[in-house]
Length: 161
View 1 (tube, helix red, strand yellow):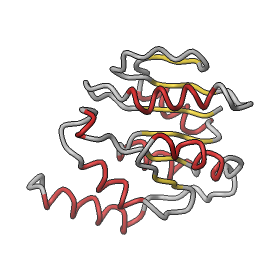
View 2 (cartoon, helix red, strand yellow):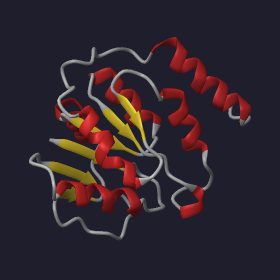
View 3 (tube, one colour):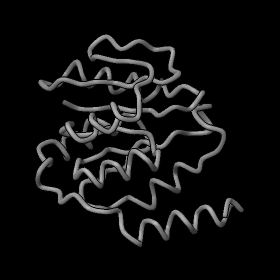
View 4 (cartoon, one colour):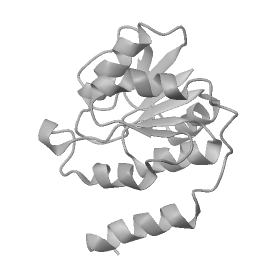
């Protein structure tokens, strides 16, 4: 099962929800999409607007692949579970977020084993294909000091620490 999550932002992320739903119609694998505040209703995948944190943790653990906004909680959860993840940052210009900080988060994790970062929905299918079948081949790990340091630096630069 492929797990798609857009987080709990009050702003929708229809661009990702629509792209994932289109992809679900082409794949031979079940997909679950957590749609958040999006107004788009998936036609090719099971879906729910929001799920509980324990449900999300279970989805991350059981999924063969995760597709997610650049939410640090989901990224760290995927790394800890050893589940490959495609990260799609929300964009301010599309009114998916209030700023573009998710680009910086995506940059901090880009290049890690089992992590693909895509910036436009047209890149999603190729990234998914590159990561399919990698579950079990990526060592579950603690995100480590390097990622934590990058997040701390990001927060300090914005006066959040």
